[in-house]
Figure 1 (cartoon, rainbow, N blue to C red):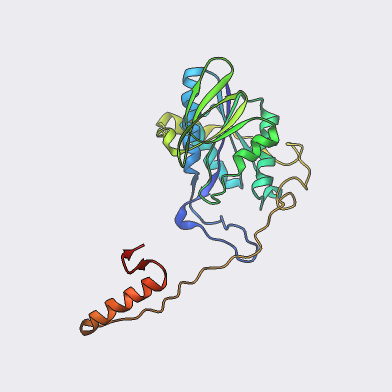
Figure 2: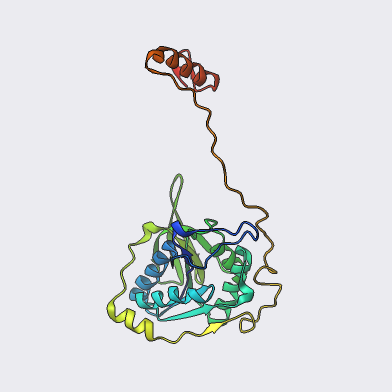
Length: 268
């Protein structure tokens, strides 16, 4: 079974900074790591490989420093990686990112199964996985917390949704985005780290993927960040001193009642 895993290098949460002029993320000088949910996708791919056989290929699009994420994927057990890096990919929105990843899957596949994390911590959109599936013309399922194979060319998944668990059966090939509940990612081994450090990475850009300039990067992005602002928190408190406690209690109940949060009978 040929399995592709879509991974993304994201900034450490404490290091996220935005350029208020361009509306893009400032990645230079920020700590980086593999998107945590993508680690669960990679672990699931490795588990499936153990039971079904085949090969796991990790694909990632990003600036040159994203190479570290792919080397970590190799250290964790991926058989091969595909590094998509080109200055013209910069400022891609989810649609342009999905277009690039879909083109890479078509060029390096075919794949029986494509896995990705449910969302990335730096964008929180959850859009790229489903968009890739639509562009490739394959069925997909999201919020996947369990994967089972029936041996008949299809996969059965459990989806964790608000009102319980849904069961779906999808034909292969298909794409799944997974939740953290699906597994517990393993740590890389020392031998894996050594092999990953020595591995040669091939970089693919817009030309090698057969994309035109208006399909990727900022030019291929139908959405834009028009404005960034920092929300301000303003308070106008009323302070009651020790001798005014009863007055303060009355004022508090009057305020709650004016907001419809309590009535004469108590909390609503």
